Image (cartoon, rainbow over all chains, first blue to last red; front, top):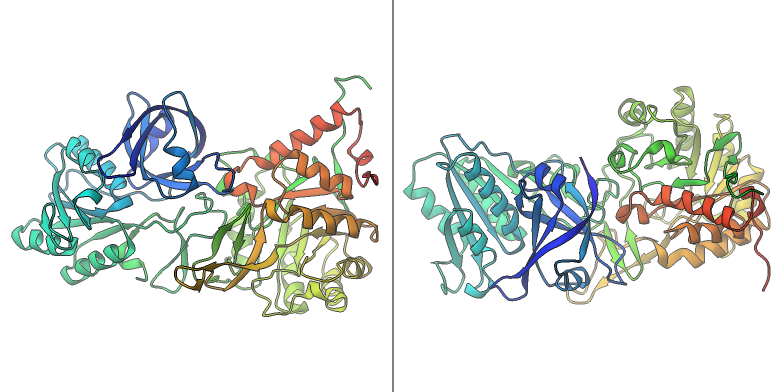
Length: 263
Length: 308
């Protein structure tokens, strides 16, 4: 159920990637109900923006009623959020998103999560969910960035117990090259049937979806078109589908079968 | 007046009574079900649903919405499932609530408008119909609401098909809105709603490209409120039918300005995207304003603005 929260901020952490922050808040119903891939729509007092901004749920601690988002300072809303401290409240709607990632933690498959930049938060949440349900689930996370300084959220991924496979374009950390190179290498080494889950910049998702097609692997993508309302009423976040129609990124997504999307 | 007597905020649009004067701008509230988690639809004056056309429309390619200073541009392209889909899939849900339904109807020609009006009337699919003769995104340069004669053609064609209240939604993209409003009234409209969005565009200077795939879009939000208020005030001088005022209304104070300018009812639109409960808060705020200022009935403030 979608609720509006004026959630007390409980923690604010700066990440090693410059300009990246994690904001944790108390929103018990959200922490209980949110699924990996779902998001919240945040209204910050910016004085200039009238629309909310969507942020994927990054982590949840249902027992403590806590949830968090990860963001980089980019525009007025994120500049405002970067000033939030415990004692402040964050105005948000959530959990939003008609579909989160569908993943069976006990299936005998290799869950391979691929992302970069703002795509990492939902993958961290998915990793957490899979490993909580089945500590023996085989989960690998391929995270890409241009260089080591821009790798986002690796701390959180390591914390939740993911097998982390970082990639950098310049080789400053981990695999040197694109995530698709690392992915193909991993798939070549391992005969376990793989399920792919992607969230990241569109060119990255398109490239990984291409690998999934070539190798006939199930592949879910979490798309992040600009979502002016997040609740399915504005029709602004149109996602072109391969059947010629448009889906709402917010309520029919944000997670789609990669084959349904017109890339 | 004793302070515990609630002022009357019920208003009349043709034969339709609204429990309060606040409705939702078409296209800013989906079909009601999307927001039902967040607010009680029974507390709205009316719900005005997303535009419903004779046939299904896929809409425009993205990018469809960009945010601008105190506003936003949209070029959705009237994406909707068509009137039969509305009747089968959307209407049964809405009818579970005690809330009048206004259906916004665009059309490609008078017959097309009349067809949808007839279907909605036949099945009891609406309590009032808003004729969208002013959508800036699909008209290919021809808005019915930019011409008094074309306005009359559409309203007359629809008038023959229904006894439901007909509301003509007018465009601000004209030199003088008054003759168009008068023409709608003369052709049988029970009310006029204004304003639709203002035409605009936005350019990304880094890419040196238009931001909207459709190039142009309709500007809405707080940025257009003074323009909307001006048009409402002008139209109020020349028509006898009620006016539903809209354009950038975000709170009760905004709505009260429209009432003072001559609107009988108001619609909240773009604000629903960020504050989906706005319509209820606006209705409560109007009631509180009337009580605080000693008015017993909302009609005492409609058109009551005075010259400075």
